[in-house]
Length: 168
Image 1 (cartoon, one colour):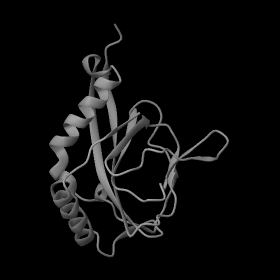
Image 2 (cartoon, helix red, strand yellow):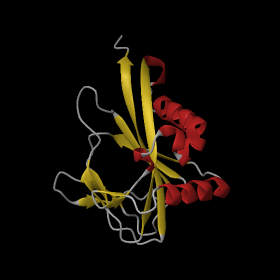
Image 3 (cartoon, helix red, strand yellow):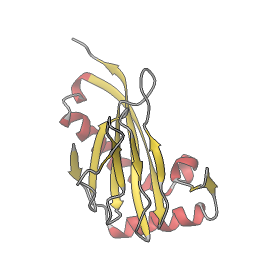
Image 4 (cartoon, one colour):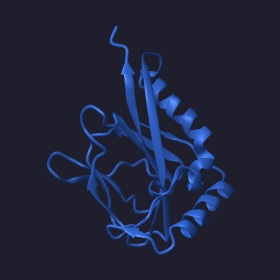
């Protein structure tokens, strides 16, 4: 499922600038550092905390789960530059793992580098990868980022974990 939610360019530029400053020269497993690795108080994407609280509330409402669940969420920014990729992965399966994951394309790659992996181990490219597009999907879905062709690609990724589900 998807939606389109654009943020002000001033805020986007602020987050990109801070990510570059904070992550300058830092890599983990060969990839530039995303805000996930920063302490919450120093993360530049914290300026969007209220917005993501509302966005994730809307997601749970769209899924018909808002009034029958309690949930927690986390999110982080990832700034990719030309040629950077992210290997295939999923966000977890089973108890204690997230249930819904999302990607918000703040500054997308024109080549639509986000890919799901099918059962046949083939890439499937969701068409919703334009500026402001937000897609959400089950956390167990395998996905990856193909090498980015843009100068900069900024996404916010995250998870929703249900801590209580009313089964009545």
